[in-house]
Image (cartoon, rainbow, N blue to C red; front, top):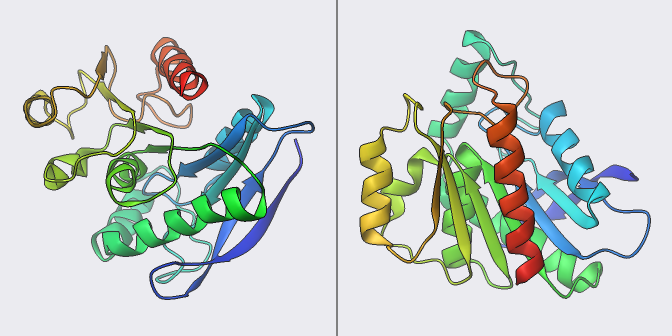
Length: 225
């Protein structure tokens, strides 16, 4: 699939941030904002973009930490996790929401996509939830193992959304998932017999069957809205 790195300006304060852009060879089914894990826009995130582009989507993955460290990519080891968590903890959600809005607007206004979706992983799962509530122009959302969603239960998604969690995810106790379900009983929550990061084949908790099923559910949602 064709791809390149582009520059977009945030709707929050006009900051120019990098984004990975992949698109299908033929007409697109719609646009997709794909939001990174805490590790940045890594080769894994770019690979996911390429896969969704192969499925027919015009995909943009914003580099959310560019204000702190431009082009940040961390390894999936303890040192990388520590670096990534430091950036995440110093990052304000308002910037992520503004960057996502810029991606949505670019896909609609510049790329001509009539429908735009969002998916995200880890920190990106939380961003997907908040963006579904605060951004305009989204048709549907799919969030993977977003631990921080419990901090944004007052936000109500304005588009159809599904969530994915691993039952054995030690960083997201099922109590958190229960709190989300209680606050938003209309939101479909899918539980997998897997741990945190089950969608990533770079991580020890990767679970192929769970990743495949979650992806099928995500694509089904996008195609039905």
